[in-house]
Image (cartoon, rainbow, N blue to C red; front, side):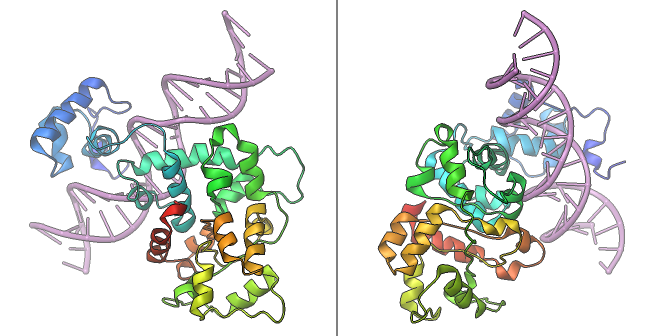
Length: 293
DNA sequence: AAACAACCCAACCGCCAAGGG
DNA sequence: CCCCTTGGCGGTTGGGTTGTT
């Protein structure tokens, strides 16, 4: 019934690949290369569809594939990038040489979700579910508190660090950072920031002032759309960072929070792309702070 | 030891865009 | 233009594995 002709033929084998099949595919690709995947099964002597061959090669057989546990650096990068671009696994994978989108996707769906999930020993009102967390795409990264540790040994810390505070979530539209491609009303951000962070009335926040933009840069990247129960959570780490911001203690701010990326993924996926930080913005931001990765 | 639950992850599915005829 | 093929992508599945009772 499906319209994919390649996988509908009765003789086509499916399921796990045998070592013999792997060997056939490796031998063929390494000697002939791959131009047209639909031709590969016949020429390689495989009873698979071309699509399956392609997937097998790209995800598992190609020589530059990298297997095994993700390094802490990779974990940090995945979390940061996911906060920036959401479930664009291929894009995330492009930043991790040798890793595939499938592997990263699986990793995210199991390992990281597990870390963010409850149980929490202390009851918290209006605590969002893990599904809600992933739906809204709020994740945080911090070197000292979170990602440089063996997370498997410390899940409660992770959980508490991320979501246990009932404070309002601070959002910031990163389009205001560089003033380009800003199709949203960036003027709302300073007021929101002002109110959320609790600056003194005589302290002003002008997004267009370069020194403030620069100073704000390190913790970087909070975005708009503060709606729903998930927005009512602010990590102690972020509280600390915002307190540093409030006091203009930018160095402390950077140290306490080298890299945060929050992005309302749901909003972005509903046609609100213009409010999300562009990937080039994110990449520029990340490359500016390699130590935070 | 057995039964069950939870988790992992390789592979598949469906959709989409690009490109050629 | 339209149609078809192909490759690429993210979402999802389900069999195998591991953990728990």
